[in-house]
Image (cartoon, rainbow, N blue to C red; front, top):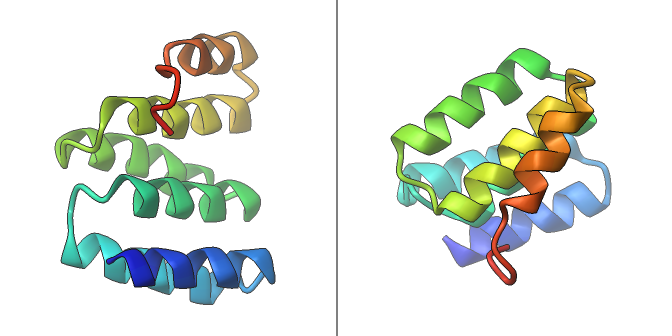
Length: 100
């Protein structure tokens, strides 16, 4: 799964968001709790302003027991996309040092 996540990062850095999404989804299929793949997918959804998918990813990450610090980062992205900046800041403050 590390290679799929790295591939997703590479595609994302070139703004090839469709390919990045595919790589992150494949990583999540291989490891349902892969925190890096969930965060990468959240970045794709945030970049493409896919708010409903980002909201669903917040719920899915919790259901899949993704590491809590990564869940908070995904939630902060969703809050910011909805312009709920106080909540986004609150979630970002709850991310443990070094958790992501």
